[in-house]
Length: 558
Ligand code: C2E
Ligand code: MG
Ligand code: MG
Image (cartoon, rainbow, N blue to C red; front, side, top):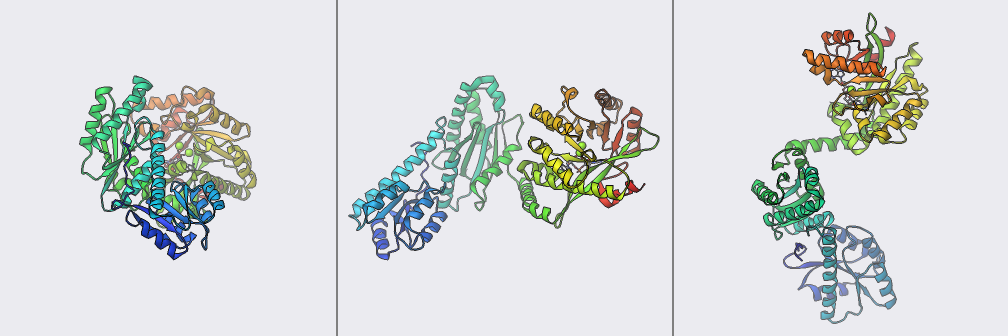
């Protein structure tokens, strides 16, 4: 088989586990098999299970006695066959009666050997046959999954890579993700059939540079390949050769390579490729064939993010997340008037100190923790609104941010209404800031969801308007009650042309008949300019930074 890297052999020997509670049986079998195999032994089912779990990638076969203390053979057999990682290991059952042979075969045994044992040659032949069959089956189903390139698919790749490590623990390895950077473009230009040929060529190119007798290769996703190979100092030359061969076929293809060099073998094999992938991702959108290495910066980022995720539950429990409030001021009258506030989360981490939401919100959006965090923040905010309402005879609406991820939750409005009701406030007390980019992905569903929220009485502010996902072509139909200009408008407003742009955005708000809110106002000059242009509300450091609830109370007292 061309693509089979046989790495399950140690010193030319495969490993077999003999599980039998009788010493004499273990000794007889070990004696018969020890020349051809490494033989491990277990005295009972539980011990056997431990050994199998710890050697899942190296055990080629189990010889299993049915009657053993602690855990019987059949129970163990069914445990093994129901565990993904172990189910591929063939098991030969050692039996005394025919009835249990049938049960064993039905439970997943590949063969049986009767007791007392037949001649050593017979035992060895059955053992050999079971191992061969199982290995062939694995390899065939591996190639069946990727008939195009003949390379391993993900699961098998990881398995072989692990086996390789097991037998070559001291060899330094590199994990590589290789892909076509502009696959979409290539697909558009050359069509599907040509792309299939192309992937074929890439696979051949990879094979020629990374020979399969020393590397393990995988066709992971459509345009992505994994390579696990002996460490070399530079892969640039090899990438160049692959790219040249491929570009002879179709021109304009850009290949990229993310490399995790000298992998840490203490971390999971799939995680090593996550690291290579992170390096690869840095190359997105580059215009040359390029390589990038996983480095300390990426590592520190991952470690930091893992830390944040790991600490999250505790942080919620210990109330390390605090809601800060930033006032919004109406500026249409003579004097600026408090018009509302935005609730913004802060994480007071006991060891990392203050962490800004810019660091953890995108992370929690990517792994789903955002639901829990938002729930928490909405609760705290509503509770605070209630407290102020009881204390002061004045209503100041407070807005909370709704993550774009939340917009995909069909249950969103129910969750919000429940929180509002539980805290005894009214829907009109709570404004919702929904970022512009949320509207653009899957817009019809999102728009329907926002409309639903509005029908139920929520006031909707479109956040970060103009931040680049521009929804100009649909803004006229969007259900919104206020437009919050992205901060970048002000950052850029240092010349006449950019000032004019702000006027245009304010004009859009007027057309929509909704108030415009400018955030990020830091200077008097900006404030005056916005006032002159007819902006209704402003928010920014010029008036106040986001502040804790007790400080914010001054706006109620004034
Ligand atoms: P955003 O909703 O656009 O919030 C405005 C950000 O601008 C806040 O950053 C605020 O502190 C900052 N800011 C306000 N005035 C000024 C100013 O004059 N100058 C400058 N340079 N910045 C100003 P923050 O608090 O770091 O929040 C960043 C983003 O994180 C927010 O952007 C929002 O998208 C998100 N976020 C914050 N709190 C929450 C939350 O509780 N839930 C969710 N889902 N997202 C949140
Ligand atoms: Mg906001
Ligand atoms: Mg904003």
